[in-house]
Length: 434
Image (cartoon, one colour):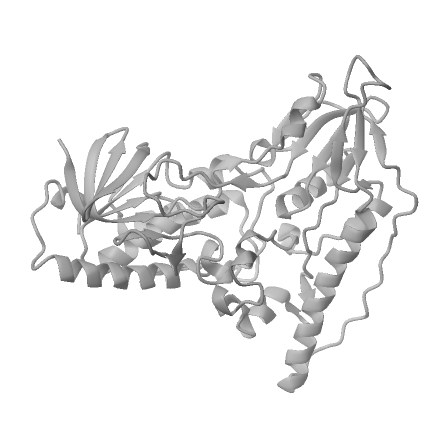
């Protein structure tokens, strides 16, 4: 039998839980489907030493701000899972775990959801599955020798899981840089393909940079007021780490300490030189350019903070000017895997969105939903929550979900009042709370 609810939320991570909290505040009966268990992605798709890159005080899920004794610290993986589990326990959301939504379609004013637990209908649906669904491993990976162990960053846990030998890390977003550091600190020989991701200072002029940016209103800047507009949604995050109390990630310093830096990976294999096996890696000649670009972004952040301090007459210490500690010099553009003793490759190349289960024509040519602040333009009653830059920089983070969820909840409530003269007695609504 089909079961009907005023609202169904797809996804029981921090976004879906936040939505549920806001709906319960407004006494709107709803149901939350979670494909796995609450906290699954943090528990299963992060490495052992993973930690937040934003301070704990920014963990501001609706009705559940961080209340620990280390607001300026950075929660590690297990603490993040505990925070999310404690959030769910605090308000008892109507979550059904272990249920996958396989199809979502719309007929008239009603949404139809086909799940592994049967069929459901809803007046309104919130998609809160985030934007990172499928590991993005480039096709070039298929050309590596079978003897090389390959992992996506979501599969990496610790250096001990890898075979002896050197490790090639491809990608220098947050995951790539932090995993490269994890291996480097464990004494492994690391070869790092450096891409165009920007970096951020950790502390500057007496404060964590996140504190400055928060004070300056950067986390409140709407996407339509950002200089890059919607294009910013697809930009790589600045690399930095919260490890050991938080610090900058300086790839140049890693190079001084023995890490081998290369440009972006261009090609695998040279059949003429090695007809039996694809042993040779080719890199683009862009290592210096990418390192310089990352530094330029970090310096521009500092200059913005300098301007804010000067404008507001703030008394803050002055940091010494940045000076590169290492420069690439005639770095080879090829590498023999066997000669370098590389036995494993970690692809830190991000994720792809996968909304193929949504059978409603609302997506652009890149698979991104058309929406205004999470409200879908082409399907009334359908919403998205938890996407990066849904509305602000904090939308995909613990810091900004509350604002987005409250905004959508008000819109949902308004539509609910318009379409329902009085709260109907839907089957099983009472069982899941209101």
